[in-house]
Amino acid sequence: MELVVCLKVAPHPQDLRVDPGRRRLMREGLEGVLGPAEAAALELALELKGRYGGQVTVLSLGPPEATGILTRCLGVGVHRAHLLSGSLFQGSDARSTARALATAIGRLVPQHDLILCGTGSPDAGSGQIGPRLAAYLGVPQFCLIQEVSLEAPERRIQVQRKIEGGSLWEEGPLPAVLTVSPGLRELRRPSLRGAIQALRRRQEDFRLEDGSGWEGLGSVGEIGAALEVLEITPPRPRGYRKIDSKLSAAERFRMLTSGGSSGKKKERSAVIRGKPEEEAARELLEILQEQNVLGKPAS
Image: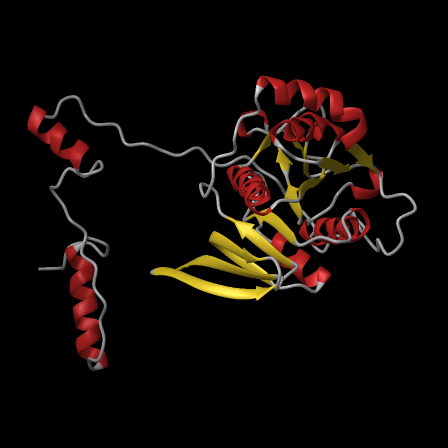
């Protein structure tokens, strides 16, 4: 069985830097990390490999700094790792990334059976790669999966999907695309022997692909992007409420346990339905005056 895992190596949240001129994240010199969803997808692929046999191939699109993460994937049981990198892929959004990955899968792993992706990366988190891959490859997709069962002779797959209020079992043909939520699996750590073998295998089983000469690649990178980034700004700092030290111990405890509310004044919320206009307006006026929005009524 040929399993493909599409990984996004994203900058660590503590290392995020923005180039305001190009309106992009600055990834140069940052090795990056695997997000929890990508790690869960890789671990599930390795489990399926152990259960049904076959090989696991890892694909990623990003800067050369992602080489270290992909090389370490070789130490946990990945057969081959390919990094799509170069000027051709710069400025990619979800659409052009999925198009490039779909072309790479057809070229590098033409006999693929399962393609696994995370539900969203730590940086952009659009969650579009899996569904777009399925559309470009013309195969079924199963999102938010919890369990997988394969019927190898019939080339069928059964998946348990998470839905609101429970779960759902579905069945479909292979090949297929699966998206995996963070926390479904915890990625195994490479053994010392595996880590050493990964360094030795790097020259043979890791490939840097620049896309040159690929037929059918189409518009990728910034040219093929459907979205234009208008602005990237850091998040606004969250405000916090300071508890007055002059309050009594009982009042301070009450504010701590109520999320900062002193309990002296409670806001009233109401929905006015099914009443005549004058009566509804009168009730609304009473609520606004009660909350001192309009001031106290004239005597």
